[in-house]
Image 1: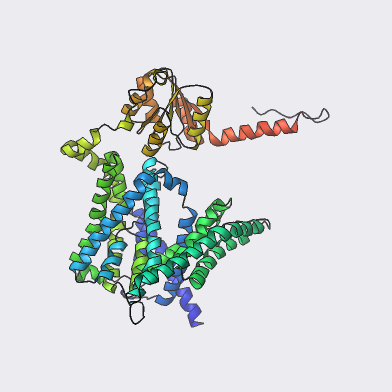
Image 2: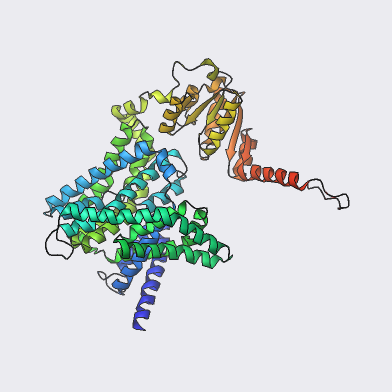
Length: 573
């Protein structure tokens, strides 16, 4: 009974205090994650008052790690990553290398050995996906191209960290740190590890992607929502446990692959929706348990070290990302948004720091510094997003270098001089080349109607140019982009992008340059559709409405005319 009471006390205190402090943090316009971490600090052993059971909290945190990584796998989209691969992959890897180097230099300066410096630098190099997604969602940037770059960048970081978590135990064992006597051959240890990981990955891709969807289908046929949720959670936890027991793979990697395999099935959306409450609850317990490990005295005892860690996270990583994004010829605003997105660390940093301490690679002081840097960087992250616009204006006003980056002419931002004249007059300007825009373009091409694509995905525009499609890169709300698409002589403006944040500005810009242009808009929101239809005189296609009409036409065609004996229906007006 004492153990049961200790479990209940830990869960009740952790969730209750996390709710109160999370609410206070949100009202103070801070991420709720700050409140969860502070809740852990309050019930931890380093502060007076009630102290929760640390061993039970650690086990709950392990479940939280599994479900967090399962959620990451469920939302991992290879297509989304490939769409921004040319900037996200090299950008993330170079930025992680720079941050790892900066953190390692600090650790070496403090007298730590190579293993501690490596773990410490890696822990400072990866941003929090949870914090980023919440920030982008609150700012309405999640569905924009800039948001997709930021998310793709963090997906690459997450994948790199998964690989680090796999490699760290054998490296520690080879260095004689994980409780073994002498060090073993590093390459032999890594070879065995990669064979184990390769066997697990092959099993998941060959067997798991067939068995797991089949199992979910059998459970779905029962019609029980509870059994479906139980099946999803049991699959995540069981696969994570089996991966560790049979293949020596970490819980995190096992849960990640369980989510990634499930994402390819038709049940992925429902699995994500049904498991979300439980994932959120255990994620809160994970962050609370992390807060319990933090000793607040490190801020008082080592303020200069804490300041140095925060500067690496907020300044070092951000400046590296800024230079990389500008090097890839993206606008200053995009570069600043990516900088703000990366100016924090989170869940992977906690997992890596905890593993480093467990493997005797990282001293306790290092974990405290990582936690201090995480708390401060997460708490200040909304401030950096708020400073993007004023900082951009200040740089453009006072910095000749910034003006040079902003005013440089990108060859993809204007149509080539060799563009056929048929694309420059009486054409359709198609904004957005996603799933909807691609289909519109195919139908226009089949009907021999000339069109010019305007899209913010630089790689996509480059690919379209290679295929002979007239395309310009940039935000269609920018008059310069509309001018390059020759909107002044176009017949129709078709806005097929799902991000509706700048639709009104796009239409106003187009009408300013071409008052007689026809406008066709895609929308997901009925209220917005009505506003656009009346206020800017646009033809708006609402996704659900068009789908219902198409299905109704097909149903009527299959049903045929009503029998003569059937009573007449009442028309709806």
